[in-house]
Image (cartoon, rainbow, N blue to C red; front, side, top):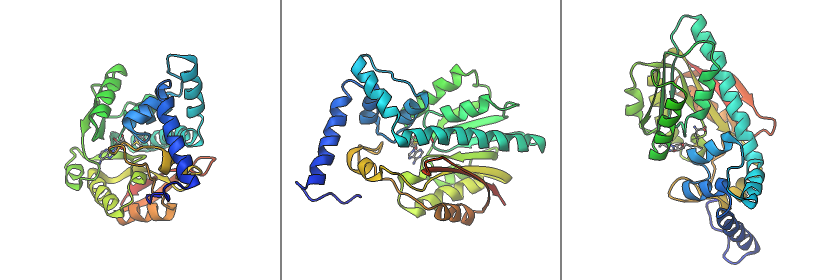
Length: 277
Ligand SMILES: C[S@@+](CC[C@H](N)C(=O)[O-])C[C@H]1O[C@@H](n2cnc3c(N)ncnc32)[C@H](O)[C@@H]1O
């Protein structure tokens, strides 16, 4: 899907037209404007999808927003959010029952809304929440959300590269509830994932949990690859599907044992949990 279509072919013309339509639509629709400006896979786009309401000025823009938010992929992303929240609640409770203070980490948080929403539903506040992302826009938006939620005493949002083993390994104190969501499917190279997982393995204390997502299928994968731009300098957004077995093997090779999993009703996104051995 990274290979360009034959120039002038019917499919090539169709995809170029779809791309032009999205650009034109972004004059009216806030959702499309965020996608065109920051990438359709950016933290800002995901935050718009999580807010899940039309936010444009005019009627046309709001109609586009409404339809855009109903795309099957975005519906799946919202189910993924609820699954992450559910599993975070479940494993935070287990840690609390074992009298271990809950220390959370997310290595590519976007705006961090799904983590902060999860925390709001915990029976007990966690001891700490460390959110990281490599984009300035996301770090500022996340810091603002933390302040709005009154969580500044336990939560912080910092810059960080999710593939930098050393910087993840240096996280102190060690955490026991780590999250990596919506990141690995943006990258084809498994060596990058191994680097990230090796860092996570060191950041998580023994017996702690890693919540990780996987994208096993997408009904609109080709349309997305050909028509939508990514957060990486506007390159095409070519998703790297992984079978669950491939993703689980990478996590297990890094020193974790899988203990749980949820999947949406469309069969697109899974959220799994593994425990550090
Ligand atoms: C699809 S979004 C997912 C956001 C969030 N984790 C979620 O599930 O809603 C991908 C996120 O990965 C971040 N990202 C991409 N490469 C990164 C890197 N090398 N280090 C840290 N964050 C990165 C992007 O800035 C973006 O916020």
